[in-house]
Image: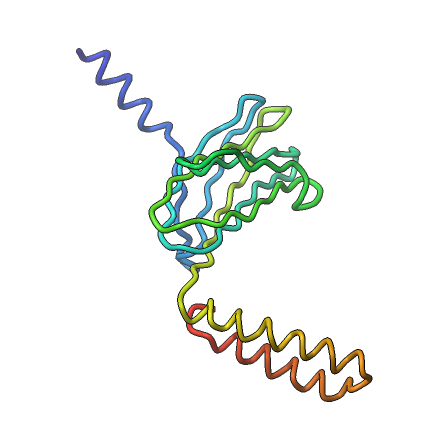
Length: 166
């Protein structure tokens, strides 16, 4: 019995968990030991929106694989982040569970990051408004109204940044 409890305790001590950063609660990170078979981390989406997930290392070229449990298919990347960074953008619903696997051809430390960009009615409405405005900006610029286009683009950026949840 003692051996069973000891084995369970050791297994729990070695589990890898993402931790929220003190300066940004939407940004979670953890250092994992990657190898050919990879290290796996579970993550639960706290809100509906996008998750930017990347794995980077100074010494290794990591591979990233994400499975949203209950969905078909896997998302995989090797080099989208450039150099020694693998990156994926994953759309999620609140409460969905993800399995994030990080692997590399050689063993070593890899920093895994998950940054949430929650969506709300306000952010979705802002995207709809701004998509229409972008079409107008393209028209203005194509007609040579560069000054007006730049003025409206600056206003567009300010409006987006003022959107609650942006």
